[in-house]
Length: 118
Image (tube, rainbow, N blue to C red; front, side, top):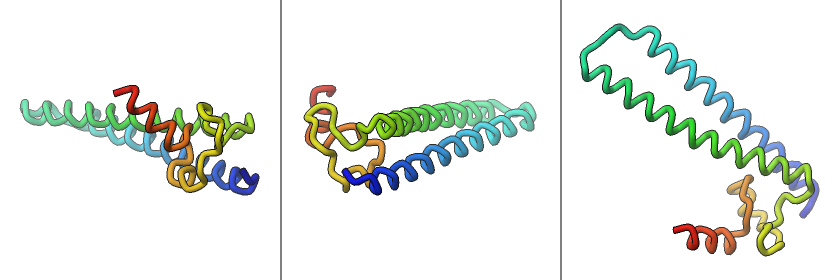
């Protein structure tokens, strides 16, 4: 895999990481402001706040999972293992890495892995 492509993907991964961290910080501060400024309301308002909180936690978990995948991809770049499927040892197609820069496996191995985990 060409070094220029790997450097490009490293830049993309770092940008995605920064975007997630900023998004998580924004969500946290917005939710905190909402809770702190809220006056005691009726049961519907309380239920709505609880649902909003659960949604934010869920989104946070998804972002945290994606953040871990990005960090793992950056580690693979540092270890010169980026873009190589650990299962079949073949290069992951450039188009796949452009679509999912933190992809670990090639499409065939990923599909097989997902079928086994169902």
